[in-house]
Structures are given as C-alpha cells and as structure tokens.
Image (cartoon, rainbow, N blue to C red; front, side):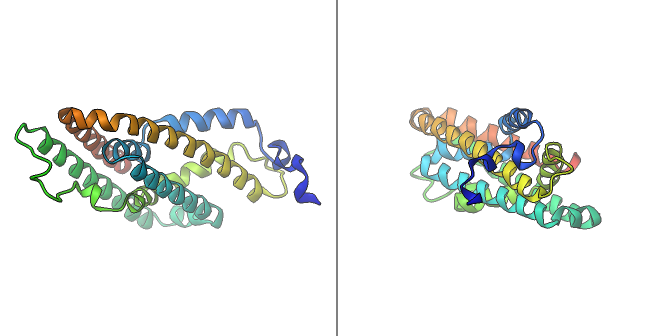
Length: 226
C-alpha cells in the first residue's frame, strides 16, 4: 500500500527544494528571541515545568491554527483588507504591552526589600491570571505577521511544479513544529533548573520579571512599527 512506502517521507518526494537549507533557516528562526519562547522560559523559571508545558502546548496549538489558516487562504483575506490586518495587529500589540506592563510592575514590586510574597496574598502578575495555555495561545494568535512569515518562508522551499503543494506545506509545517517543540522543551528544562535558584535569590527573580516586561513592551512596539 502507498501509505506504507517510506519513500514518501523523503523531502524530495514531498516537493521540497533544498531541505537542508530549510532546516538551517528554521533552526535560526526558532532560536531568535520572541515573546513565545520568552513566555515559556519566564513562566517555567517562576512557576515550574508544568506551567511551562502548558505554555508550550498553547504555542503549539496557536502556531498550528495559523498554519492551517494560511493553507485555507486567511493570508489573502488579511492582504486584501488593510483595516482588518491593522485591527488584528493593534490587538496583538495591546496584549503584548499589557502583559509587559504587568511583568514590569510585579518585578518592581518584588525588588523592594520590604516585599513579602505571603503578605501579598493571592496577588498575581496580570500574565499569571490566565491559565498558561490560554496566555500562550493568545500570544501566538495575536501576531498576524506570523501568517505572512509562514507564507514567505515556506514558499521558498516548495517546488513550483509539484502536483500537491498542500502536502509540501504540511511537511514543512510538521518539521517546524517538531523543532519548535524541541526548543521549547529545552527552555522548560532550563527554566526548571533556575526555579530553585530564583526562590533563593528573590531580587534576581525580580530582575527577570523587569527584564521580561521591558522585552514584551519592546515586542509590542515592534509589532506596530515593522
């Protein structure tokens, strides 16, 4: 039967051009710091690996939805409607800035020597009020430029004469998701290692909150300006 033919798993038989270059480009793209990876690392180092795992699942689901949207033609809709694109982009920037301000606020609060976690009761940074799956999923879905990235990046490696480009796109998407989840898993491990360290050094933990908050605000401005 055809589905048992392992030759179908070969990149060249899936209509992919220069698969080694695609792998290298994907790795470098994933390693670039972004709000998704920063969120997973931050929440793991503060809350533990279970929270980081939920965050990674949210990113996986969000990226998968965006890739499916590309395959269904959502990118054409955004391109044909600048107003819709600007609305989605603005919502994404507001969400990033809101998260950044929340992180920055809790970091500044924890920096004070008089800060007492127990006395603070159930007060959580805004980011932590959401389930990490929901927060990460929203992070992923409120970045419309990711749709255009998938189109621009994937199209370079799809053979123009291949009979089934949807299969090629799916192949490239699966490879990207595997590499992305591997990277996020490594961030979860790193964050878990730092968890006890930050519990012993609360000011360094506060510095991490502040740093993450500033970066999230920077991501918001970049989303609006680029």
